[in-house]
Length: 134
Image (cartoon, rainbow, N blue to C red):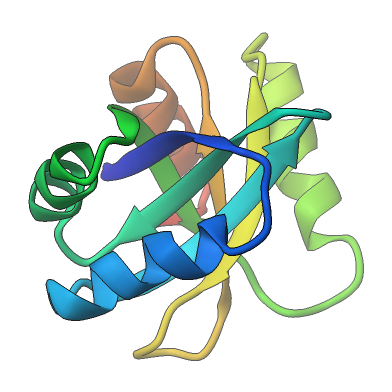
């Protein structure tokens, strides 16, 4: 299980650079991220090396942040592997709220970061179907 940092931020020039600058100053590494935006605000979801430290620093800078449990599933880098993962989840009646890509720096393999309702049982299901959770 991984801890994901979600940052609610104003959609304006320089915001992402400001956030990444804070993380750099705190020596927090970004392992994966996705940004969803609207006209005025956006949500930046990140898996980072130290989620608690990142949250504290960003909140001190005025950002609204939240920590969420997510699962990282390592997959082979070949056609159809994401589909196989999603099919395994579907067969187990598991809904994925959202998904984004990272990678395992040790193995060099893609890691699908996903958020579901019941992380613990989903993790057991995924492992039982032959996938590797990171």
